Amino acid sequence: MSSPLSASDVLNREFLEVRARLLQVAAALDRLDRAAGSVDDDPRMRNIQRVLEVLRSGDPKRAEQVQMIFSRPYSPQWREGFEISRKG
View 1 (cartoon, one colour):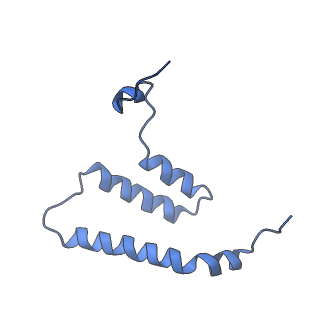
View 2 (tube, rainbow, N blue to C red):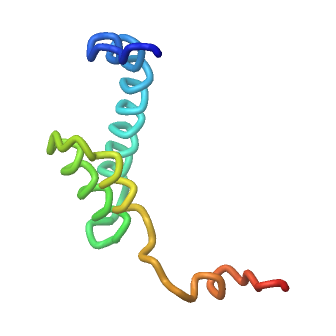
């Protein structure tokens, strides 16, 4: 059985990829700020703002919370929404 990595080992392994993704997010937000018009009332932008708050929170379940923010609420009729029929 292998021992878990230390926080330092995880940071060493993940840093460049995390850095690149954060730069990509920052660049997208900069483009939105420079673009004409406003998206402040767009639910997608509100979700992005909520995610940024979750990331700042330090909660150990950030990934789960982010996934839930971007997920659709469950609907018992989800098959109809995707035009999936039951066979059998």
